[in-house]
Length: 285
Image (cartoon, rainbow, N blue to C red; front, side):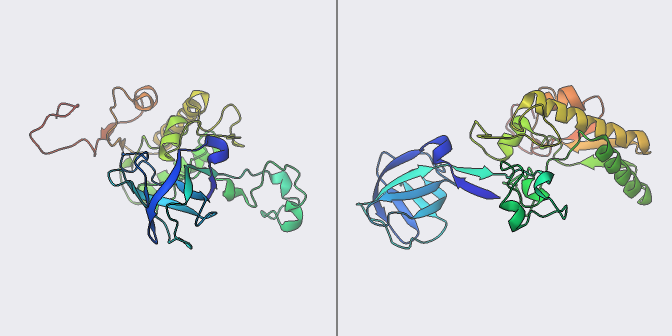
């Protein structure tokens, strides 16, 4: 994924003068945030004084000591003459337009790129425009948003699952993280984005009625397709049940569970809500 300086889009989170710095840390004055992790994953830019022009990523922030740890060492260590800005990063997802690939080989070469039919679509190949989950709970994860609007895709997935489970003689199908799918607010939360999540663009070729960060109509339509995929799996297979993990979601209040998945799911597990202990939590267990 490509990360850009978010200042032109979202403004400045904080700015001021540096108190002191070391090779890979910086300590701010008292006007900086006192909240731990307040500036994590943001950029610090030295804009004036010693070390001007350098940009680093803040990997962790200690609000008590006003100290930020950086992703790599300074080339020139700033001092108290240095002024800085802290800004958010934004993710650039390049758009794909097959018209730019004039020879149809799946790659927009240098000559084609220099003369784009659609200059707003700058992806060199189709998968460069994927809606990838960029901040997975597991660092090796690479989750895409499935095109469940397409009935041919739904049929293919259902047949693939049917064939695997029939060959293994299994009678049930389990979906992990069943509520971590979709677009809209869920997509925003997965990316840990700041609203507006989509600054410019945000439409995808397979669906033109709304942006990816909109619950209505985009994510609502997506969940209708998602539910239809599960129905298709049930319809063409001899599976006796389909269950899923909803982590710490409440199945009675979560919109996507209550309105879309309840009628077709057979059971849920709540792996983040099962506890051993004396305290009673919000679920009453």
